[in-house]
Length: 305
Image (tube, rainbow, N blue to C red):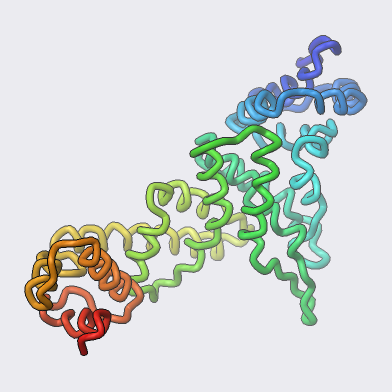
């Protein structure tokens, strides 16, 4: 089966890792042993080149095997120490099968094979290592691990040469990967609309990552979590459709504000409209009311009560 490339080529272990992911089988033990002895040589490779190799592995059908071989060969510890730290790192006290590394490999494998989405899946839980706390009842908590993980990604991005939009998207997905799971069916239309707006162009990737992040072995729990995300997706579609017919704020509200308060067209009108939108999104004002209904709120903003 697969054999190592010339030992003079420092990148050969990554090429083996790619083969593992593509062929869905591990190499001979002697190949892994040889890779471990030469893993340190890869430290001199350009980060961007290593990123390309890892990304190719991430797109393989046997990605879980390729990732495991990165660990077995010592490459993971050199290039992604944040992930190496998750190996055998328990998410639940006394439950080895719940370690973050095993969970991560499963999430990546379950993720839709889009490169940046799989990178986000790979790194989504790196913040759990520095945030783990044990509770008095024996439970484990990872307070704000998504935010911590997003900050940790900055160093990963610098090491592997991520730039621009790719860097922004991966960081955004890591930071927000728990958001969709917070939906419980009681969100108002305003809350759904706000979530949709905040996720923006990354909504599809975020929902796909949320689905992949469900790894419970209990069928009922898994199905309930998947159904919740599907319900959120449908609610977003429904709110978008309703807004297309009748927007949350009436059309022409800007003209009415100018006429009622004797204001000229200016940036101030846009700011007033944005304040109204934010109040509706926050549930402070009801949506889809006659334009005149919103004038007292504008008066308060202008100090003309």
